[in-house]
Figure 1 (cartoon, rainbow, N blue to C red):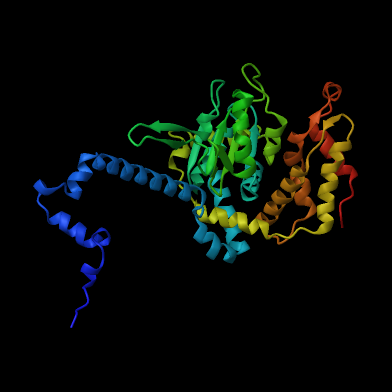
Figure 2: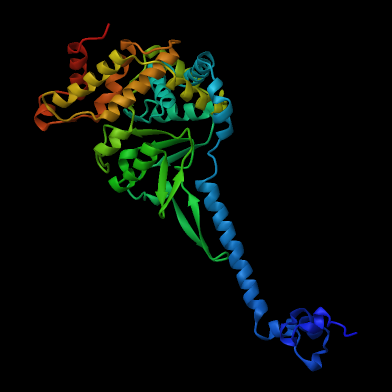
Amino acid sequence: METSPSPATACPPAWNVASRTSTRFREPPSQGLSARNLFASIGGEHYLRRWVKRSERFAAGRARRWERNLAPPPLAEFWNTRMSNTTPDAARETYQRLSQNIARILRGQAASTRKLLAALASGGHVLLEDFPGTGKTTLAKALARSIDARFKRIQFTPDLLPSDILGVSIFNPRDQVFRFHEGPVFTDILLADEINRASPRTQSALLEAMGESQVSVDGERRNLSPLFFVIATENPVEFRGTYPLPEAQMDRFAMQFTLGYVAAGEEVAILTQQQHNHPLDDLRPCATLAEVLALKQAVENVRVSDELKHYMVALVGATRRAPGVQLGASPRASIALMKAAQALALFDGMAFVTPEHVRELAVPVIAHRLVMEPQARFSGLTPQGVIEDGIRRIKVPA
């Protein structure tokens, strides 16, 4: 009986890969090159090491890009699970703790503190314009130290560059890649001290950050902190070596106001307070970053009637038709006025906005956005006067 060939002998020698491979590995070096020796003879180990290193760098870069662009923002779990459960009373308690903590440092500035916290809670930014020594920088530092959050300060000078604010990519010769080094804009609270001393090019570096809470560097978009709050200061007295802020930059600030000089009694209390050391050295945080974010979320839930929205639009629209005004306020002013009024209503323990809240904030929210004609400035007409005239003329909704 004829037996059938085995599978190993049935296949031609050229197709018996497993048999040929195993045979070659069993052959002594004198009969032929082994696979390992052949791999080494053509420099395969060198190319393999280069391929592995490049693969590791590619994977690391892809992980960094994913973490930067696709990973959830900080406190995302808090936003998704607990933010909706924040009560107005808890948010108002956060405001009171912040206000009282700042009042320990800055005496006689309750109104300024109220407006500063309204801008913070409404998601806007603040421009403080006042004389030297009135407490602009102290107010910014007191707010930053009252919140358990990141704080950075930029001292604006004429030689400051946009990369000094946003960050820069530096080549790493060890990894053969460019690594981005974040600038001071990547923080929660940013103090832009003497902002008008930098060139317009450097000032414009904050436009995207303030308007969209993101920056674009090297063709990549990088998100900023969900709290990102800018407090800018400038001195209205000195004009030598300064650059006026462009209209686009001024429009990014939700409010602009002054602190002014305090009363004599408050100034005596300040002397007593700082006789031995500065009170900022002993200031401790009284609110967490999560509580401040919850405060911002609670502000959005405050009701605004349609009649009051028409009233705010009428106030802003009146600046575009007022005599002596070259450039009126934009719709961004109406949005900022509504959100800031919502914050004041929450601070006062109310569930809805009243006309008094709108009138209280009309000047600090709208005035700095107006561009007056030269003849109007010489005749003594001011943006504050234009807005106050509109408040008197426009009928308050019932």
